[in-house]
Image 1: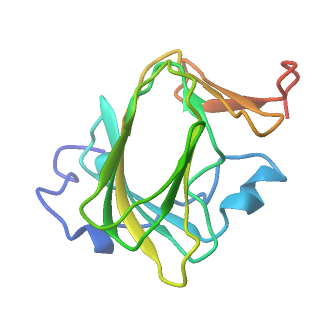
Image 2: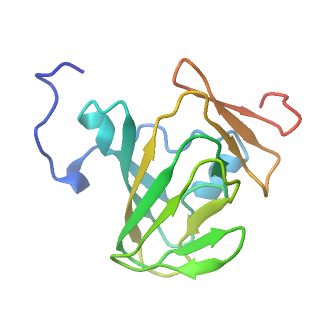
Length: 160
């Protein structure tokens, strides 16, 4: 994207949706059906961190429960009441609430919309080279390659 293509400001809800609904391999991708991401940071050419405006339809999840080795994550709830699920607790969040997930703790986390209304939130994370992700509930791990792409593997290291 050239500087002439980069907007100065936009209405976040008018940003285009991410073209690929999920990066997860089958059958995991179906578990985040109903999630829509608008990659706001990419529109501005941000390379050090990402920002997504994410909508969860009733019954959908933000991701599989996961923990990053090097990437800090932060979420800020704009609308709705998602349930934050971590290794230690389930917490209902609401508009104006936020949560942060420090890299390297191993504390798996995800948001699940157990209500009848949509959830809208901002998610922010850095783009740390060499990051890896563990999924405590699933036979899955992910590695962020030098090419900027995620590779998904079984826990024994065999690729999907």
